[in-house]
Image (cartoon, rainbow, N blue to C red; front, side, top):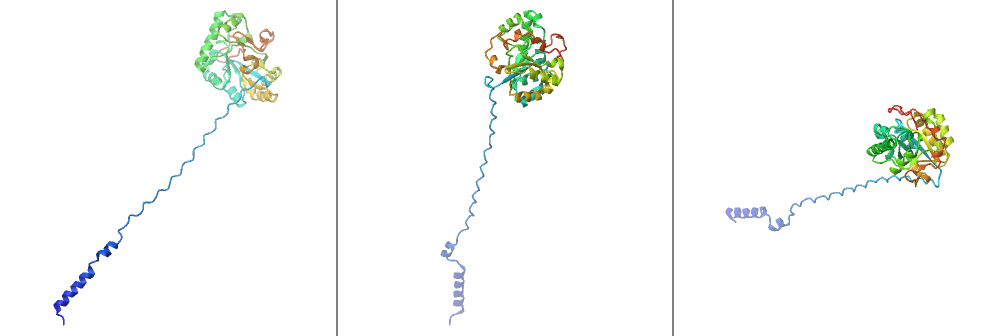
Length: 290
């Protein structure tokens, strides 16, 4: 029989063996692994913004192949010129404006817009005197002052001259030649300054309309501006392209001092389209015409 002391010692050893893990068990336990980092989802590549295609510029009208007519407006910029410009733009029409320096000074925004929107600009003097009753020095001064103010306001010089009332003499031709500018008159009127009646203006223009015609009008006559949409629509229906004078075939190679249209200077009826009095009308609202 074993002694109690030996039995107690054996029991203690057995408990020690059971409580101490073996080295092999400890080595086999996996260490706590770090959770894998989640892969970020790729961000969607933004679709490129579509660049709007530039508007195609309108092709210039070839008046050797199509029927053209030029509407010209004297004494401006008139106080209704902005409305007229709106109408011309809407109808895709171009015009020629013969400007007075005094009104360019008082309505510079209108003059600048005429140039920006592609219309022709010409020189119609500064204060609208009769050149046939003026010394050559006065003619030169009137035209040069207008050249200067138009260039200052619009960035561009007028390229043609239309003498007030269409009155032309050798002194005016001499100054035009010095300034290297041709002279543009007209071969059809509207008599808008006289009738100030929409139907009368409409009928007169259509009566005088012809291929490569140059029509005299005024942008300070409110009835002219009001009837313009109807007039442009009818001219288009009749096959006309409404263009600036510079687009007409005969106007492309004019030399300094030349007079256009051909024969206009000799036309005895020319001045009936423009008043020849009241040149001292108030600056605020021109009523002298021509």
